[in-house]
Length: 189
Image (cartoon, rainbow, N blue to C red; front, side, top):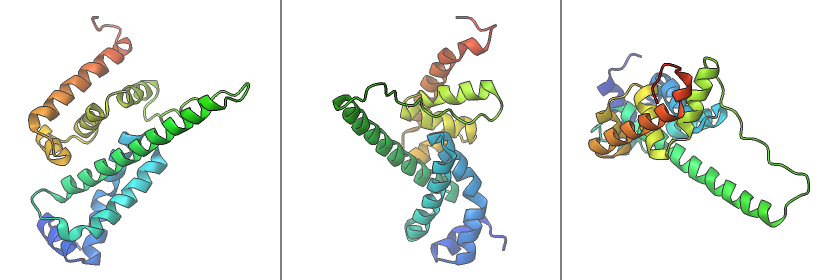
């Protein structure tokens, strides 16, 4: 069934199964891509996309329609990614503490997994540089450049003032320019 955005929102809020399936069909790829860009892991991204739609379904009566369904789903995804990244950082700190207490002779921790390359070495370097940004900058850069959202839409998703989003975007892009200046031999230092 072809729903308009408004029909989809209304039917989804009422728990209509066809509307939910349409919502997942329309937004699954975008939600998965956002989660992948945030985490750098395809398996985690698929898992978070599922969690996003489960949470959306469970909280469907809380969707008031003040924003688009896409904005609401992106907000859920960003929050899931933040939680996952916090959890991973906490786990890493615990592992590091354990490792410093009882080092094993000759043991070296494995290098961090490399990001999957989409278009060769340059894409890998860009993707890696994006992961080194602060969390706030990374979220804004990913939503703007990989999902082509406006700063106003990003502000709505992140529930952050527009000027803060613009500032984070400028700071993030400046950081990326510095980190990637070796990719452009014509770039001035």
